[in-house]
Length: 355
Image (tube, rainbow, N blue to C red):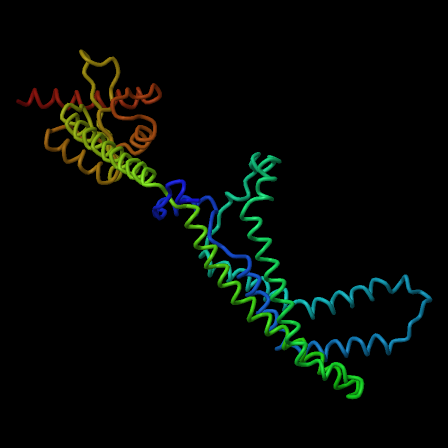
């Protein structure tokens, strides 16, 4: 289908990343089921003695306790609690290992990945026409055939395993109750082990197919690759233009420091250059501002052109947070800035008189 559509090229790393962000990953549920079933069988075999001993102890205790209908309603809570504790003690290891194995099997297939995208509500999922198409799609038909084949293989493996032990099962009546139990356990273990191995092989095969189908569905046409390359190239051009514009603004801002009346500092982290000329400006203008490294450059530039520097932490912080280069100072700072400019004018007058 992909070749008919002209999608003959492998998906690019960008398309794979975009699909991953959307929660679209190559994953096989058959592989997860196979791993979980194999872990269950191994755990059941390992804990078979514990299950037998604990089960027999619980059963013996239950049968040994005389059953008294009188006042039964008052003991239901105790009886129910004991039953729940018993079930959890038996099922607890299996539930815990099932959770861990399911988590690990997903990690093996997709790596550690969390995405909320598949959980988002989409109206397209409620479309009955799309739903019918999915039910009768080639993928649904393939899954149906796959499950039928798996069911047949499970039946065949179970039959072959049972066939080997048929003689012992048929003649179980003559071996006694104690040996009968172990014969049944051994038969279940053999069938479960064979099924686990078969499901594991099918799970690996299904994972390989899902990986292939995933990349095939994401395959691209040559035109799509060209468009993606142009888009990425355009993004690089935009970034380059932004960097160039920022450099130009920085150069212009540093050049404007030459015309500043005063530079207000934090004193080490911030520097704000303010210019005020009665003939040009109605109010003082911020011509440059910077933090850390840029603040040091502004201060060096001011020193090189004999622009006075004054320390005022509150004003410097307020100016840096509220005013951009090229904007007038805010009204609430008029008085503070006016006092500093007045001091600068006084200092300049003193210098002139000394000369």
